[in-house]
Image 1: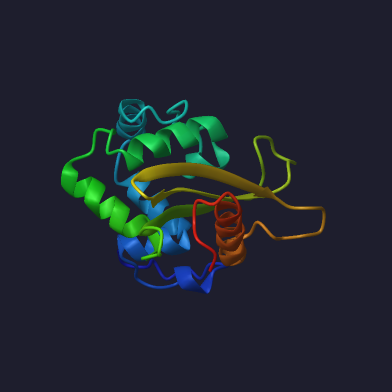
Image 2: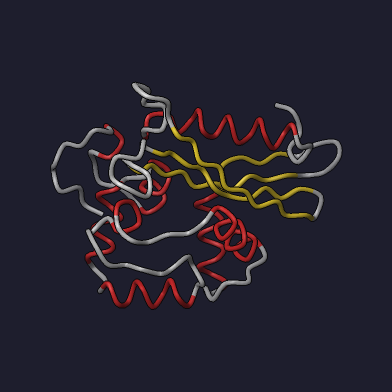
Amino acid sequence: MRWDGVVRESPAWNRDLTLEQAFRVSALWYFVKLGEMNSRQRLADAMRALQYGNADAMGSNQFWIDGPLRISADGQVRWLDNLARNAIPFSARSLRLLRQIMLTDKSAAADGDWALYTKTGFAPHGAATGDPPVGWIVGFAERGGKTYPFALNVSERPNERKSSPKYIPERLELARAMLERLGILPPK
């Protein structure tokens, strides 16, 4: 998609982007534009069909960040489990492409191949205005024929900006460390 020329806080956002590039850097402008290309009703209907949270697409054009859309961590994990098992109403091609875009890391290990699929995000405040910013990483790991979905929210301490988009690598490292500690991923 063509960049609109507006300079934003993340340098990685300030250029033309493919869907995969926008996904990897959480380019907000890209997804706002995609949302504007569809009606709110169409987006809400799609989320209902996907059984994604409360499926509320009202509010601002960033409804998934500062609007009424809500999904619990447990709901997110259930949805990711369904995604990992190809049990959501997407075509086989769309599921394959989504997995390709979400693939963050993979390798062969002595005790079996593994793969890690993730998506990060950032909201300037929590559920209510005045709540601290929150960064998150969700996804699933596959190893030994098993799937392990996860959702991790990272809230910041006062005067700290650890949840902002530039800390995406730290969120990924934290998620990896947790998955390693649980024995789901092999040590790096």
